Length: 89
Image (cartoon, rainbow, N blue to C red; front, side, top):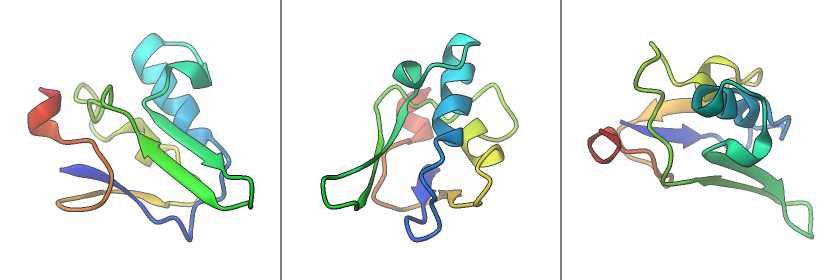
């Protein structure tokens, strides 16, 4: 499974990044997240899933999905974002 983000639904609130960082470090720090949400110079939304994403294997559901208020993040079998359980294990 992989992380899939419906960009048209993402509001850029960064709740997913904060939840992700908490998974990794037990602290809220955008620098420690495996997900990056940012806007380019023209206001377009950009989303990156870093190789450190382990899909929160010790959680029932990845925390980015659980805490996304817009429900823009899902698990998918195929999508353009990184986050493969086989690679993460």
